[in-house]
Structure formats: C-alpha cells, structure tokens
Image (cartoon, rainbow over all chains, first blue to last red; front, side, top):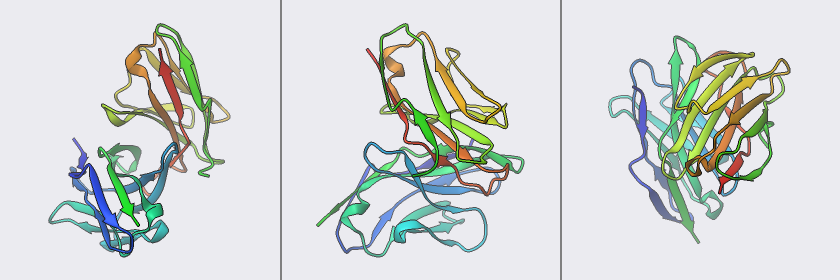
Length: 116
Length: 114
C-alpha cells in the first residue's frame, strides 16, 4: 500500500530563515507526489507536484520541493520564510490506477510556525 | 478561490439524523473526490466519481453514500449520524483522467454532531 510520512508534527522557523518540511514516501511503482497547504478555516491549496522530470520542483508562493528517489523523500523547502507561511502543510501521494488518476493519500500534516 | 464550491459551510445536527453535503466542481472537471478530515484520523479519502460513475472507494462507512449528477455536481449523504462523524468534509475536483492533474479542494463543510 502507498503511504507518506511526515515525521515532524511542528516546525518552528524564524522569519527570513530557510525552512524545510519533511516528507518520505512508500510506493509501488512510480511516485506521484504533491504538497498542499491549509490555512486556518480554509480548504487545501495546491502548492506543487512531482510526476516526472527534474528532481527540484518549483511551486507557488516561492516554495520548492526536492525529490530524492534513493532516500524516498520529497521535502518541501523555501529559502526565506515569511510569517504568512504559517499554516498546516500536507504531503500526499496519488494512487495510480494503471495510469488514470486516483485519490490522494495524505500524511498527517506538519504545522509550520514562522515567528517574526 | 479554487473554483470548487461546497454547501453548507457549517452543519450542526443530532445523532441519528441524516444530512446531505453538496459539491460543485470546477467548470469542466469531470472527477469529484470526497475526503474527511478529523483530528484523530487526519485526512482520509472517502469516494471518487468520474463523469457520473463511481471510480474508487476508500474508508467510507456503509452509512455514507454519494452520487454525481449529470451536471457533475456531487452529493455526499451521511445517515444515522454518530458523534464520531463530526469532521470537516472536503470535496475536490480535477480535470481529465490523467495522473498529471492536480486536485483542487473546496472550502469544506464542517459537520458537528451533538
């Protein structure tokens, strides 16, 4: 069965510092990986995805993620954190029904707190 | 704004009751997914529809059912409600039938069962 793990419940970063939110995955076959962000009382917003190609994926709001096949990781990064980045971040892997799209399997989420 | 709409935003009801949650996908999207978010279970996939047909089922209870109508909107029906059904229910939609399409989420319906 496919799964993702987010080992940190919370990440605390000072504004202006780089941030990393960790994600590891377990899949059979090719991984299709996503990051979503959830602000309080809001739905999930898509940040970025890895399907194939370059291991460094750039997404919305200055975020990027690095796909590492040997370490089965897909960590989310940002060079300089903003207070407004404070939110709940979810890593997800997509079920692959033989090429057609499937549902997302989410990690437990990591709460990012950026202090001024 | 993702383009996915959900109604109602909040729902408070009693145990044993039945409720219907509604979702309108983004214009042109054929796939609709339902997810449940709770404190103890996290975000869990419930069910997927594609162009009116059920495509996949996840951890959906037998008391829950869904359908997708010809105009592509979807409804999630929850019956014989229990306290543990209190959660945030999200609908998501995506275009096409390729793994390359990301899912866009609605704002959710917060269900409180008292």
